[in-house]
Length: 86
Image 1 (tube, rainbow, N blue to C red):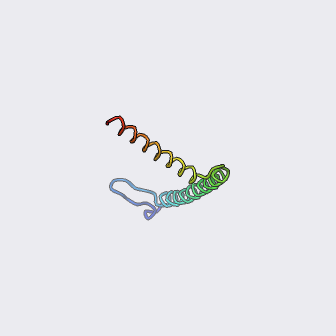
Image 2: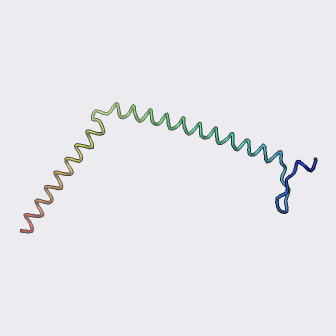
Image 3: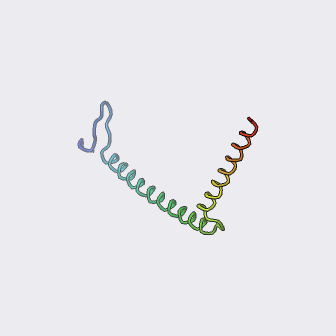
């Protein structure tokens, strides 16, 4: 093995070919992992959209109704507190 195939760091020597191959495989693995992550996210987003479309009541309408109920309950509680204090 020629001396130019080894890199010396401090007290140990690293094989340059193995280091290069390892870095290349790590980069390739990162690209494959990122691609898989994008595919999983796309599949989950599509499933979520389909689920929202299948609901009888749209989420925005449900949230508005719940907010109105919370406001009414808050007003009723405030009124009950005011009448019990006096």
